Length: 194
Image (cartoon, rainbow, N blue to C red):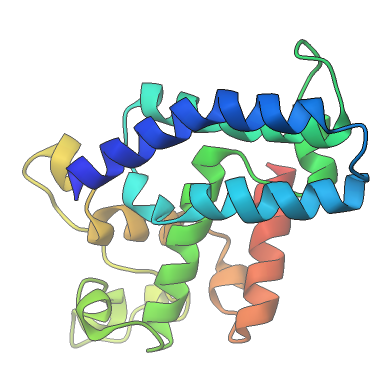
């Protein structure tokens, strides 16, 4: 799996120049709405593939992916290479890579909490209410029990540890949401406003 991710990074970093060059040659003939669809289908879908597995990845790996996202936003808006990309990402409602990872982990934790995920993921996350025999205040907030890891670098990257960290960092009102569409909408607006 690590090899596949490294190949994927390599593919994205090498194809970025070719993709940006070929689209920049024809960007004046393509309307912006089509360009958004084209970039979303070619770049964003590739970027989002297994992105939750990159939780805790080295900063250098995330910088490469962020540069691809930034180049895509500049391409859509036909902005110069040195222009600020933050307002462009907000206009497109695209999350930066680090928040995109947290967004995917929060959605997976929501699915686990509502028993809509595969059983192997559900077994990794246990609520604090299910760990003891007494009724605690934390059981009303739907917080997840933190996982102790012996190796903070490798163990902290596991789904159980990273999803628990992201889920417990969400506001309690968001964790109490039962509607998946409302949860995704509120979560994205929370991460965009951060």
